[in-house]
Amino acid sequence: MDATQPSESRDTIDIARIMQAIPHRYPFLLIDRVVELVADQSAVGIKNVSVNENFFQGHFPGHPVMPGVLIIESMAQTAAVLVVETLGPEAAGKVVYFMSVEGAKFRRPVVPGDQLRIHVTKERNRGNVWKFHAVARVDGVACAEATYAAMIMAQAAGPA
Image 1 (cartoon, rainbow, N blue to C red):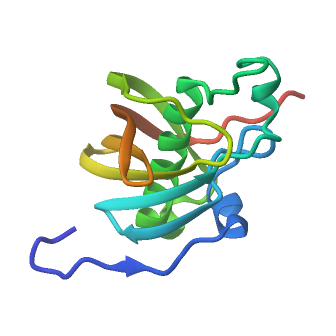
Image 2 (cartoon, rainbow, N blue to C red):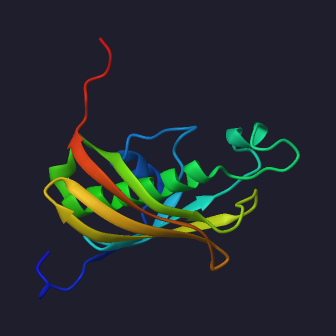
């Protein structure tokens, strides 16, 4: 993006458009909408955490806590939507794959009834490799953060 051009902000991206952008499906689709997106810069994803989530059956019975790795995955999915929306038609038939996670910190548990607001900021990209920093917040309070890298690649063919 040319620094002299104004940033392009997009309307809310609903679940149908998210499902067009990324291949994740239940039970592994971990964002419900993207409420802010500035192409090539940042996005804010929403995950409404419900007691009906399948992972709460075992994590932990009688004391449900959203697993930290799934919070990180929700960050990655928000970033993947940012990448696809930034690239537009160039992203067709491609998938965004995790490469690394650094500096992950978990500051407080995420429990049923919480709404995660996942603030993702692109730090840089070179070719098909993108680096992001994300902070997940509940009621404005940070509950998790991480820096991670991802690569956009052609989607591999499924099993024959």
